[in-house]
Length: 466
Image (cartoon, rainbow, N blue to C red):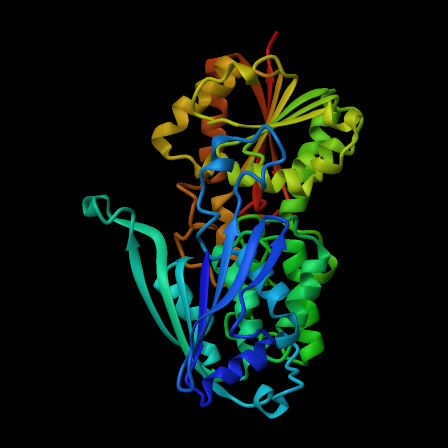
């Protein structure tokens, strides 16, 4: 993983004083995930270039018994939170804007060029993030394999940034925006991340036109943290929130954006999870599956209740399982807690014998992510083969979408949704599935009900007939 930073300020070697790194030496720091090195590829009077080379050890990241994806992945080379952490560690003093030897230069706007060989994100995303801060952005798509151009483009790009600004500001921008492009973190994201975002974003983030998107992606789409960050940012910077600020909306946030309401009311997704957990408790479930568990929000609720003796989280995405592991702090859990919970990777459209024999299963806001052509396979895998005694399934109510400010007619709540059902469409599907597989179904609303459009989310409680 590489980052290069160049300047043509003369004498260019003053960059060493600003970064507190001698151009004649190689500086090496051991990080928890690998080795970070700083060296200068050129150090002349007219141009100076510093290189950050980060060697991420993917095996070191795995706490034992990992999936194949834990070992074979893009983490060693794609600019991400690993690189951001290294920048903070290597250039911490420079980020404060202090330089004992060149104090006037630390406050001066200098010409800089930044090169990141591999970043994740579209050209449009890169421009949204950097151009409002005064950067000239050049990005080129990278092919999956230059030897096989027919394979097409990869999800990665080569990025070059040019600007004139203070070095401290440049480093702060990179510290925040590099993990924002990747939209994931290599560590558990908690409230201290809000503090980091506000500290490194001071003086520029509040005025950024895409501040909500930055906060959302930096905080890995955690709605509660995004809400807290936005409220504090606007209050501390004295910036008025424009009408319709999404406050970090994502697929779990289906609530119309409003600062006051966001500060006092639980999100719809929190309400969904609590409702599902309450149903599972009331049904007497003790051995439960969370199918499409994502980052583990429902798992955390279930783990806190001793009624649930065996909890299994399942997701097709290994990255989601890694985040769930961090969210649940399984590396710090007691043997008793670890005996109650397991996480594993599996697809919901194929039979998996590991999913059979459970009292209950939760499928929260998952079915709408499946291609319609795969629904029958999903139905068989869950209701015919796994066949838990109780299935609690939730999905958005399409009719309610018209009440969301700024949502266009016919649009769906999340770009990854393949479809969304009206109440009658969901009822027809649920009753057909129940009849075909020996279940009864009870349909319920979740969230505040509109007299004509219903609730924002809908739930089916399926009970297997004995």
